[in-house]
Each structure stands twice: as structure tokens, then as C-alpha cells.
Length: 179
Image (cartoon, rainbow, N blue to C red; front, side, top):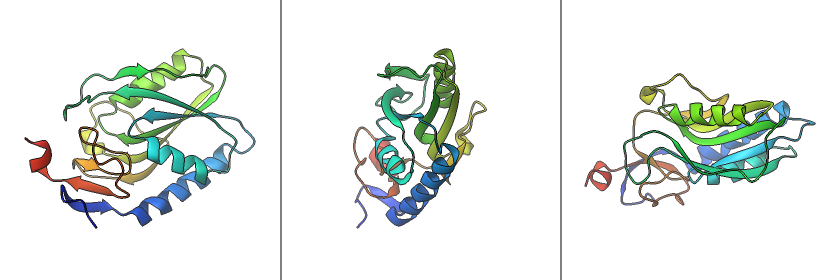
């Protein structure tokens, strides 16, 4: 059953689950025998992060940070780190889990953040990639889905802190966010 504020389901729960399993297998191969720190960029990546780490057969430390480029607006601005890590990444392999690579600014900011803190490597796994919105050169090492320029909600993605709990990714009706 689709939420009444959504125009259509773009990616079903079943399609998401299959891609998350594949991403988990990729991480398993890449980090076999290593102990990386997996970092979730809150809040949008939270659902994907948990599912991805359960799908990966690796031993990883989990950490959380928050970088926001939207706030309560729908127009991206300069990314701001609003919540720092608990642990050190110096000399460590980092797996950064992102919900969506949009303009690329957040990814550039986070790669710089980890480099400045001495990370050994940074591997980015993104649920979604929206290349039509890119303003700086940046991409994930592994992407589950490439999407068009839609306002998407569900599976962690929100509008004004709503819709994160939807089990699918849907296109939000324009009249909902263009008020």
C-alpha cells in the first residue's frame, strides 16, 4: 500500500533487499580479514546502514556522525558536520555509508574530514546516486541504484522528518513539499 503523499513507488522493498545483499557481499570480499570502522551519516542512512552491515560478513566497528546540507529546506547548501564520531579513524579503513549522493558536496566534505583525521582508506557505499544534480566531482565506490531528479522519501529518506519508515523508496507528490 503506497502512502497517500507519494506519487509512485520508484524502488520496491524487494528490490532494495536484493541490492543490499549484493552490497553486503561486495563489502565481505573487500574487507575480509580486516577490522574497518563503518560510519553511518545520520539520519537518512540509518536504515540502509543497519541492513547493509547485517548483510556483510565482516567484523566492523560501528560509528555515527551527522552531516547536513539541507536542514528543513529542500535546497542543498554548504554541508555542516553537526555530530562528530565517537571513535578515532586514524590508521583505519573507513566504510562510509550514505543514503544518497546528490550534489556531491557532502561526500567531498566527508572524504576531507576522514583524510584530515588520518584514515588509512575511505570506501563509500551509497544507496542512491543522483548524477543529474552533481555540482562537484564525487562518486561512491559502490552504488545500489542510480535515480533521476525526483524528490524521494522512504527507507530512511525524509521530507521534514517524515516518511523515513516507509519500506520502499517513493517519489513524493510535489504539492506536499511545494507548499
